[in-house]
Length: 335
Image (tube, rainbow, N blue to C red):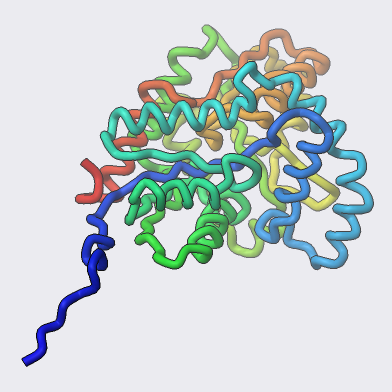
């Protein structure tokens, strides 16, 4: 009777289960110079999840009107918030990954939907490190197809390039996770100004067409805001939900952050705090659009005091919250 003997080394190739956490964020250009910003915008604005227009028409707009001019303007905005270590978004995300890894005693990686470190390169690194199971967490508390959806698309595309595909578990949203609401509330309590007339909660906007098509994003933003207001004991006159970062001529969900900042002083509300609960890490949209440009709009309209409350970033509260979220959603995979 013949005995089956495996080829030498074949059994040794089988690796034990090893879980790694992958934090996904939007991304930034490599630097503030026009070529780098143009590369980043081309990648970002070519994503069909982000821009849902007929491809031929959008390519004409993108290459004929946006990429020749927008990179210089965007580069100037990035310079206002750039740090010695680079993009604030990437710095905060990588610091968060490092601190979370220390808490979990599990490898934690950070990758960007657009730009570097790319999802493809990080997935390759995870494979080299022996990761067989990926827990993917887009750092977008409220699910939008153009944000969390696009991040997970990038992960699936990266995995398609691998011969031996890892097991993957995803966490697509955590907008109502109680420790997340607690972390937001504590962050606001520690930073808010005394006797502010109102707390503005500014979330990133999405085109109205995406909302009408069935995106759950707006409803999840309002749910986060309601839970946060309850935690802070705010009544309906003490806070407002607004949406920032409009782009192009299409209609976006409202009310607009910029419009409300211009209107509030005329209504006698001249002392406000503003936070961005839809952003886990500070970035161009929070540090420039809200903290700098938003303040200018409000003060020019007659406002007197404007205070931006930073995102959770890699504060201990945020690290602990994400640790709890991962352990809740991935029971048995993490230590």
